[in-house]
Image 1: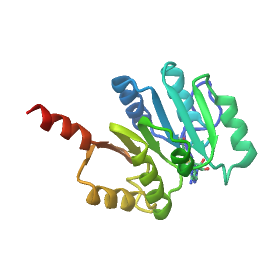
Image 2 (image 1 turned 60 degrees about the horizontal axis):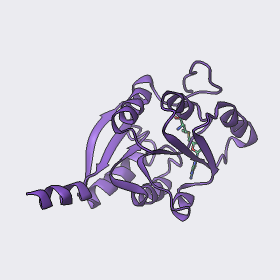
Image 3 (image 1 turned 90 degrees about the vertical axis):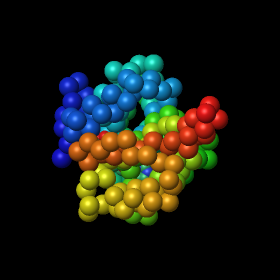
Length: 182
Ligand SMILES: C[S@@+](CC[C@H](N)C(=O)[O-])C[C@H]1O[C@@H](n2cnc3c(N)ncnc32)[C@H](O)[C@@H]1O
């Protein structure tokens, strides 16, 4: 499962198109911070971090399944602009962190995704992007949790879907700016 990336340990779970999508948004937005919930061996993140040395990459993982071996791989992949937090999206909120792009790929259960979406949405800068992996896999809870959020919050726009990834933008504050300009 996953793809090896040159010069990096472990594998990336992302398809080439999904990884390129993240890369394109980093290029376009040039955020100060990118947060990844669920980093696994950190392979995808390290590939992005190498290409964007001025962006801070904050990775959360509980490493519940992979344990020390997985952490060891993550540490081998670590780039100077990567930070690892052993925890989940609750810690994102308690640590008061925020970012322009939050990539969610952690707990894939329905309840877990609901919690990650809630915490991530509250940690997102106005106009920021929530990018969720495995939206296209109906066996996981991601699809339902994302659709519930989209139905509840009219201020989230679906920007695009690539392979199993979905990109959502919080446009609430952007709408406010546009209204005040007219
Ligand atoms: C599919 S892998 C992530 C793949 C990685 N994003 C990539 O691009 O290759 C899912 C990861 O989420 C982690 N995880 C599971 N539940 C989590 C949670 N509640 N918070 C943070 N990470 C979690 C697992 O330990 C695992 O490493």
